[in-house]
Image 1 (cartoon, helix red, strand yellow):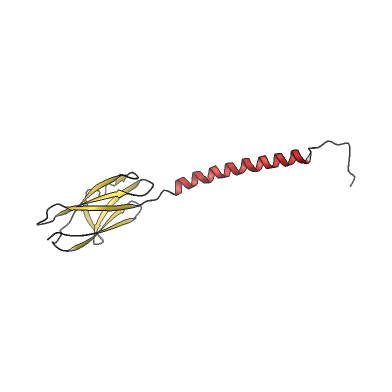
Image 2 (cartoon, rainbow, N blue to C red):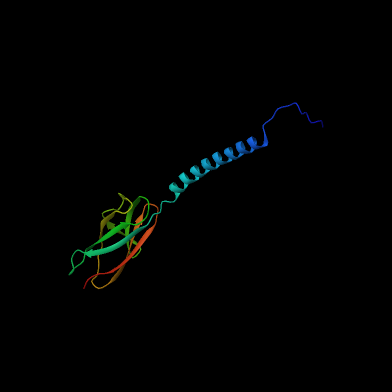
Amino acid sequence: MKILKSKKALSPVVASIILIAVTVAVSIAVAAWMGALTFTFMATEEVKVISHEWENVADPTYIELKVTNVGTGKVTLKSAEVNNVGATSDILGTGYVLEAGSDKVVTVTYNFTAGIKYDFNIVTAKGTKSPYTATAPT
């Protein structure tokens, strides 16, 4: 193969600079794309019951559970359970959207017996359960 000395071409320095510029541009585009995916998929769903209050101390018929969204994304509250059995509540079936950092009082109606310990679950639309335990007043 014969090398032609009369042909003009890019110098190796200019070619290297162009390759580096293209690599940096592509890496910035990929980083922006991955960042957008991360924000979409990284929203965490975490609901926590922080307190409770019984309606009637002598004969408790319902309890008010204060629920807080401690996650980073919106959460839809779907239902409440007492001892792993569905219970009547003010969120049953309708779903209630709870923004990140906000809270709601959920009223759960059930035939409570005084002095008995009950396990509560607040269930989200995605099926995540937030457990809480309270003892009915005597």
